[in-house]
Amino acid sequence: MGGSNPYIQSAKYDLPKQKYTITFLPLNKVVEVDPAELPYSRDGAVGSILEIAMGHEIDIDHACGGVCACSTCHVIVREGLGSMNAAGDAELDQLDNARGVTAKSRLACQAVANGSCNVVIEIPKWNRNLVREEHH
Image (cartoon, rainbow, N blue to C red):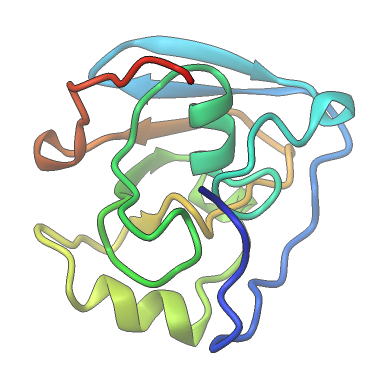
């Protein structure tokens, strides 16, 4: 999957310039993000929570392939929200369709941390993909 959505303006963000960590709850999996290794996968914006998660075999549903055309990659940023790019209109429109939205909700495909602090992400129960397909 992956790619871009030609019908929306791409998210504006700054890539991190230093290493930082993302903790994925409730998995309690900590990933060190090294800016020199970006991109990790083709899902979501480069450096996005989704792209980093998928590159480290942490499954987050993303029915649209990470192009901000659905709300299935909805996550909650428990720590480090201030280090992320602002949500754009397209992301906010999609979040209107997500379950359990909070003031700290983001689409994992659009949320990019700048690396100024560590981040803690909660993957809501309904967004955890417990089915794994074998790689082809």
